[in-house]
Image (cartoon, each protein chain N blue to C red):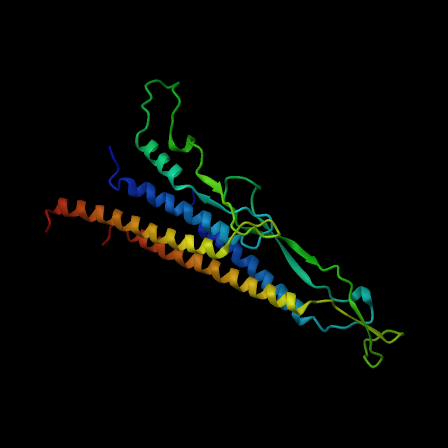
Length: 136
Length: 127
């Protein structure tokens, strides 16, 4: 048993949640990027989490980010001939980023980040007290 | 010979391990299909007593029956409100248990510390 595995476990969650927060920021920032080519339009990105280590093993698992997947929702088409990005037909394509979904994701990531930080702080305090054992 | 810290040593190890288990649950609060786990106290207590009353082996071919050979106390949690993605972590309950476990850890630490002060008092004659 590793005394400091709490830090590894909660630390992996912190990095996973901050990646999720970064992806939300990226999705919201690129929400209004329009382009004349439907293939080149920005697609919303989301992280896929997985418990690290073997499934159903006795070992305790942190979080791994299995990968980042791009949304398969087709881009929204809009007629805007005045836009310099518009194609020959005067159409522009905007990414189908759902702002509501992204905000909910952001709050969830923030809450999880906070609770993992709390775990680390408590574990740190307990270990510091353990180091002082017998000195009182 | 009984260890100086008595049962508190085993209690501290149990609390430290439970801290890891609960931290793993909280870390995986957003992982699909993750099954929350927890340590069963009575199984761990039985294990600690079994370790304290170890069977004597008089022959090298005898099987050593130590605490690690017992079934682990790690059990899967039954969720109150299971979620659609198959995750059974209830983050608020887990953090409440984590806080409770931290208090119990501090209690064990205090008891262990008191044992040490008692021994020190005996050694120095209370001076």
